[in-house]
Each structure stands twice: as C-alpha cells, then as structure tokens.
Length: 192
Image (tube, rainbow, N blue to C red; front, side, top):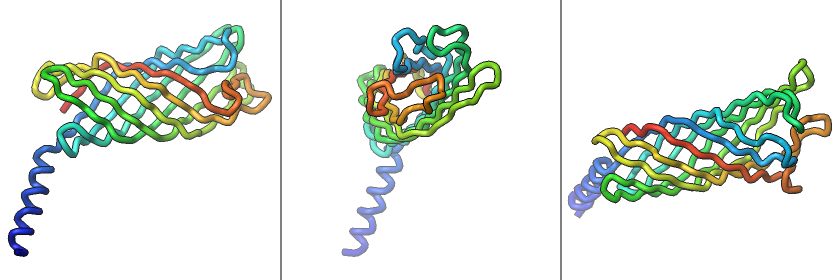
C-alpha cells in the first residue's frame, strides 16, 4: 500500500511540475492618478511594467508585478513645477484562459506603492509608502511557441495614502478617506 501511495504522489508531483509554466512580461505602462484637484494634470504616460507568473496548473498561477512611473510637471495650474516618481510591487493569483492564440486573463494583486514628489527649486520633498492593490486583466496573443504580445492590460489601481502633509503640493486625500482610485494600462512582450 505504501508503494502505491508513494508512486501516486510521485506521479502527481511530476504531473504538476510538467504542467507548470513560467512566463515573463515587459512593456510600457500608462498611469492615471486620482489627484484631489480636477485642474491638475493627472496622466503619467512614461512608465515601465514587468511581471512574472508561475502557473502551477494550466490556468492558475501566482504573479509578481512591478511598475515604475516618472513625470515632471511644468507650470501645472495646481502642482506647479514638480518631479514625481511612483514605484509599486504587487503579488497575487492570476487566472488565464487559452482560447487558441487568444489568452485572456484576470488577476487580483496586492502590495505596496512608494511615491516621491520633489518641487523645483529645492523645496521640501514628500515621499510615502502605502498599501495598494491592482484588480484587472488583459489579453495576450500568442505569436510563436515562446512569445506572445500583451495587447492590453487594464487595472483598477487603488492606493491607500492617508494624505500628504499640509505644506505638500500634492493632496492624496482624494476621497476623504485616504483612498485613491487610479488606473493603469500596459502593453508589451510576453516570454515563456
């Protein structure tokens, strides 16, 4: 009986390992910030996105995601002249369907975001870390056995900054509770 159980566990482990697949994504990322003043320029078009997903079964995997965005605002009616950068790291489950060459996916990712804003002229800068999450999905299109194009990935990107200090030029307390409802869009290359 022990031998049968040992062989069954070995086959189960080998089957799970054979079904496992790792894929990596690199690409462009756009960020729309939830800033408290509607006159402020809230688009951050210059960004980078990278993620890696380990699929432990055919359709379900664990994703680690990193994004970086940077922008210099010049003569903004609200922000003035300021340099900003936003880093985030998230991880969580991803479900991916395989429908021929089309591979739609959804995910729920949770992690942390770091922001840093430095006004021009050497004024006091502001930086903070906060809990954040990304809920969304996208579409990969297979172009070869080991390559796909991520046509689109769109995410609701919630950050939970309590609010910048009163002397800061950026007000994160957009909804009165320290929650910001941001949006991200990414596209690029998938390697597997």
